[in-house]
Length: 191
Image (cartoon, rainbow, N blue to C red; front, side, top):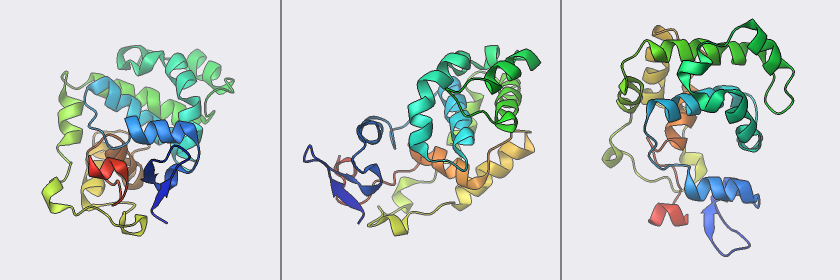
């Protein structure tokens, strides 16, 4: 099943299921163009934390992530030190993975090396031409990676970014609206 009609009578991508937070995320965020260095740094960070986990876990913890990572302001996160890492490692409201925490801090430092707006322009430069991408009929047609996500991952890694594998970057491309993978029959695919 690629589309599922919820209790509210709205046909959505089937991955939403019956979870109201997933429905809100699907309807209001997933696949909508997201711009700005800070929002894309947040998205990169959260997608990195999601690696190996369910996205709903991240959505439910996102308010706490935003709180403890200072709204994902790269200037503040870049100044985090060992005491901050230890504080984060004891916070049950987030994913307590030292490697992912350290990567977020390191990635913030790398963002600060860029000119304002450069992260946004850089990431969006990998967005494929939508005219060349037919709308998927089913989720079986939605890839886990693409040549564009491979290239984005490789370019970010070359700059020193971490937890930016191709699958993670394709998930970012979907959630940030660089690609539109709402399947046929989903109300968002029609709009």
